[in-house]
Length: 529
Ligand code: SF4
Image (cartoon, rainbow, N blue to C red; front, side, top):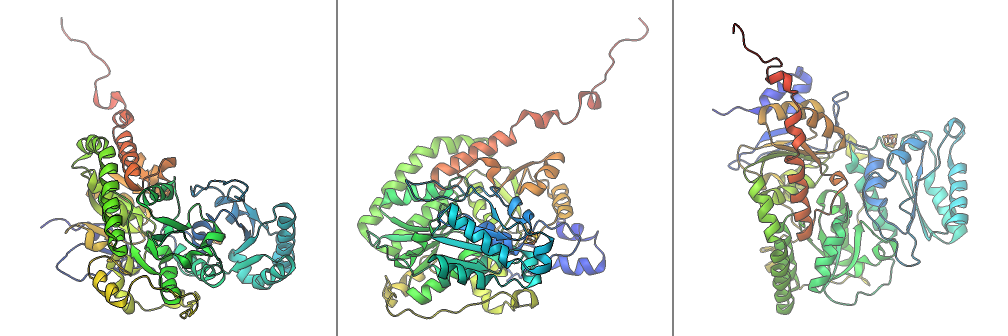
């Protein structure tokens, strides 16, 4: 019988931790309906990789929107450490504003904690209005704000009235929920309530789409837009990489939402369907096969033979351009194995790109995925709210009679839903091979232990474990920041990824880890002559 790596890793834990952690691990068996526990509290002291609700709200969803100012209301650390560290690229266009290179914080001090920080927050808004004149300001709360009871909603309302701008406050204190995921939900609610549906930009073509859950790390979103425009689509808005709040305001006018990162944006996708009738399609623009399939699904959705023909033409052109390079990288990497531990979607999406390069995934996990990201959306009704998710606002929306527009008839929708992933996401586990491992909220000890047992050739993760893994002799590429490279999406991105992997894996330094005197005699000579 083959070894069960989960059992070996769990051996080290005491009974209480063992009981908890074993529910977050499984060995894939396609013959069973497997359940994994996810989106629950991290165990104190276990060195989780997770971040907080503020990171999910301001750092992930709001931060990349370039034409608005986002103020971090709190002591200086939260704003400082999240300043420029996520590589959401954004271009300044003409005279249009681009504020994302700045860090705006109220830098709370002791008196603000004792006497309240709302006056300082209002003063920060006054200063920003004087210096920058933004049309939209967002306020993101950090841990102490909720504890001392600062009424940031009232400050936002006052600023709106005084300056005639849009000002939205997000109660995304770091302790809410159990991870970044709570912040995604809070940001989705705020954008839905106050931004989406308020703009009047009219798309120029009926092939109009929004890309949801694409944060333009290293230019990923730009590569996707390039391909879509070449085919003839109009990208109305991107949530939120290189995003513009004014375009997001008009996103309800598009005919289709493409969902790249399901975890961070599925709430908006669902709400836009109910309120405005915009269908959503699960896409994956990471990897050649994923990109080709997503483009074909989009063409099937719009059902126009000319668009379908153009899609095939662009696919053929793009594949022809990258095939030699991809074949060269595959020849070098074929047969290697990988482990992936990333936030809430990449651990799944990148398995396709690795397959394109002949690399097999032996372990994958999410920091903050929910059960539906692992098992598929159909299990959502079975997920029970616990105490940690109950304090996150759940909003419901209703059909907007004036703005509602459905691109497909019900009959067309039903027919297509059987063929393409319309409002469906089947989760990561189903795409993994039998006998591979899935681990939720992997911690540092577990990463090292799994590495020892499974011996993957490469471990994709983040900045916190990169150097520990490399010190143990295994290549670790960061799949959050792309190790300051990219784009990795689409056709051109796939070749960049292949290049970076070859560069990392075949770096001569790996052969210089052991000093020569450890495996060679230092003295040479003969005796007795
Ligand atoms: S946990 Fe609290 S203090 Fe830490 S970064 Fe998040 S909001 Fe800031």
